[in-house]
Amino acid sequence: MARAEEAGTDAQAFAFDPAGLEELAPRAPEYQTALPFPHIVIDDFLPETVVTAVLDEFPGPNDIAWDVYHDRGNTEKLATQSRLLMGPVTRNLVAELNSSVFVDFLEALTGIAGLIPDPHLIGGGLHEIESGGYLKIHADFNRHERLRLDRRLNLLLYLNRGWAEQYGGHLELWNRDMTSCVKRILPVANRCVVFNTTDISYHGHPDPLACPEGQTRKSVALYYYSNGRPDEETSPSHTTLYQTPSEVAERRRAARRARLRRYLPPVAIDLAKRVEGRLKGAGR
Image (cartoon, rainbow, N blue to C red; front, side, top):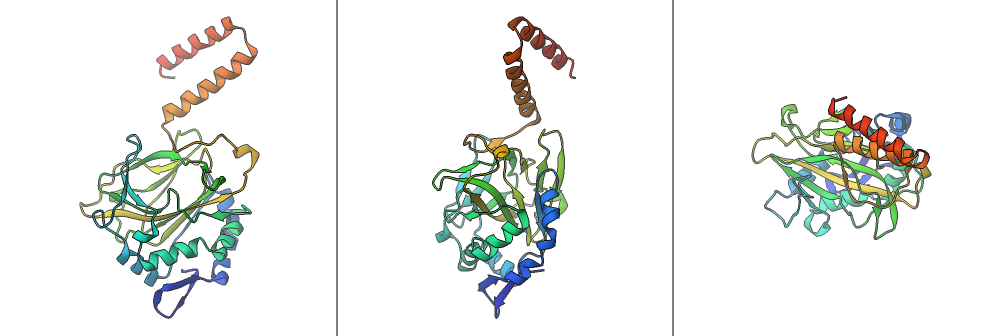
């Protein structure tokens, strides 16, 4: 149930309760060993009064000046990171999710020390996707260029009451080779998902939404950073990396060819390319 305390029935005065959040501490091993990458799904995350108030405030597709994202045809979604376009309960919720109490909880859950919230909500804030919209499988940008920090965690809070399985929009978590979807998470109301952000934390909802016209997929997204990250996760700064199995396979072939060039003479490399081409043509 809710890991929070409320001042009376005023949802705008909502605050996370440290003692309540500590009840989730035993789930840290579950988070850190989850496949295909560390993550957790927390249902009944907030008091229902807060969820109801945030939903009441949540703007429709024509209610505010949304940012419209297409990103080279890889997505169809609306988003805003402007607090001025959020209602008072939503602004308070975002502040609480960026508070020291909640960041302490995230550090204990994930095992990542030194987490830093993003006051600018770059890429985060409110997200809304209409019927037919989608977000192809991807790994997220890895650096906050303004703050010069490394992106480490995603938090997604879903706000979709009565969301049916057949509507789609599941958050899909894929393995590092992009050969299979390991987990599908239905975006139902008051469900919170937290997961590590790396170059191989492939996720998205690639199939167009099949919800009724007028219904939308709503969520609040926050991202957390650190000053540095483990060496094995380090890579040059990049934007969103959209993925398909064929693209992943091609990158693996390119890496294999690069290794071969270091050790083999040109004639051997040419032979390896011809063999690889025949295997590819045979569908192997």
